[in-house]
Image 1: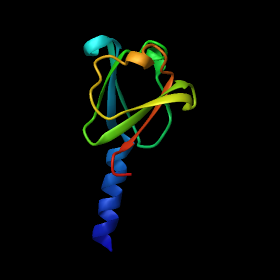
Image 2 (image 1 turned 135 degrees about the horizontal axis):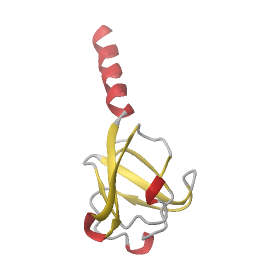
Image 3 (image 1 turned 90 degrees about the vertical axis):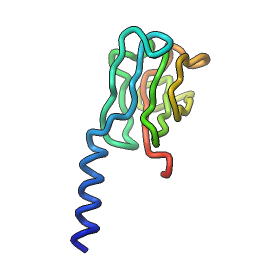
Image 4 (image 1 turned 45 degrees about the horizontal axis):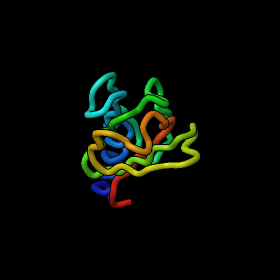
Length: 103
């Protein structure tokens, strides 16, 4: 019982401040870039990259859903790897949510 409690506690600590994705204002992960950290399955604002996000690098094992509106609302696209140019989603992301692929 103690062993499983320690594992759950360790997983919670890791997901609370995990690197989720790197987002950049220009194609090919260039321009102004920011590493988004946080917990899994929580909606986050794209912050200073709102409506300017052009490329992303998602941490291996995660999928991130990008949304055109704040609060993880509206049209979305799911990203599971590095995307050098968000063709049909360029400069429209306002919020996102990431989670492990196995959930």
